[in-house]
Image (cartoon, rainbow, N blue to C red; front, side):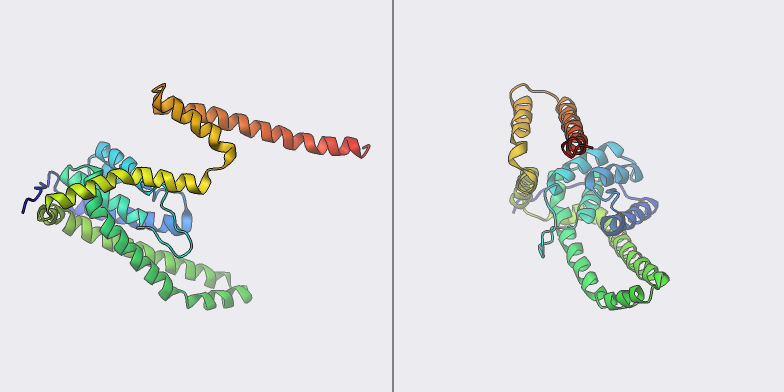
Length: 267
């Protein structure tokens, strides 16, 4: 059976594993409670890269994982693989082994799915405390509500930190040895699947937010990228221009409507 050889090119130190674990705990809280979006791979990747001494690889890996998770959002009871664990563990694996994000997805996705299952279990176990929160709200006990919130955030921080530390410190170096026993056709298949995930993410995102009013902008962006071969920054700046035009036009229309109403009423 043919296998792929993966060599550890960056030995993770204890200090690095601890710093990445602490950041993972903060990112886990941000996902549910703060929402500054530092948990997104595009932000988490470079930070993990800096903590592990390779910011360039972290930036590339974070951008790749962001494309993969861009359209994966929780809808009703359907929960996608955990974006925090997928981005952080995937980036750590990329830096530790020197492999691409498409290959690292073979390690990141199982951990991301496992963590999401655990998070769902934690939320289910925590749900009985909602009655306690309702009681605190009815009695105007703001301190009690705050304590429940801090308890939830502490549990999330510890869970994300412990799992990340165990994987990065004990698992990152061993992951390459484990993956080395995986047949080449499986790793290549996962690599191809990882390459398709950005397209799937964009497709899901368009399915959620695409409206007929935006079709013209979509076609314009496609023409600029595919036929005129404009750089991404130029296309982004053109998008900003159209967004500003749209914003100011709507703002002017909103300001004109009260004036027209006053004129019609003879004020």
